[in-house]
Length: 194
Image (cartoon, rainbow, N blue to C red; front, side, top):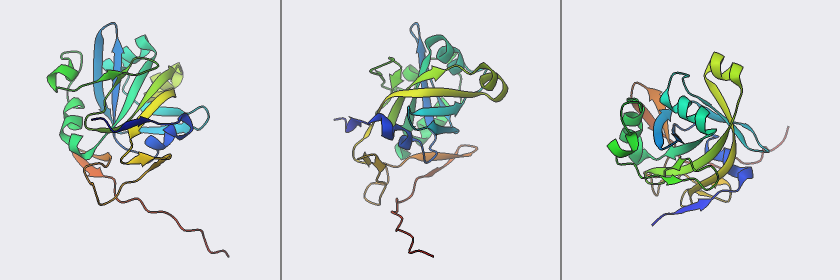
């Protein structure tokens, strides 16, 4: 049973605002790929836009450019091994979805693969071509056109990470296959004044 629910586009940036490692999905003419990326972030609220750093020589970049879109999926703690595995081999030689038994569904707007099993959220993104930035800095920009999240941990536009289910937390790559998971969410109190 899926616990995923659509996320309103004004709240889509919040899905990656806290800097989680993401799985980048891509597809073109029957070929598909998934890779891990540690550097993604929101860059604009309305319309929601994001940036992700992806090396220009990757199979993912090739598919993204040909298709014009990609997916960003936010893996949960249970997907640490999978995240490391898809980030450690090339999709040019193997269909990683088949090799690692990843179930994906075409996104509702662009048809890019979206992953729910083992993930907390996904964003479907339309590539905004910025050739200089893509070539010089491996940074790709996109507009988020649809998004969904696990309603057990993201509702009313906010994450609710807590002690009740630590398996439902995002992961953050620290380098060399080492990951941290998101901690408890805490609400800030209003500042008392001068």
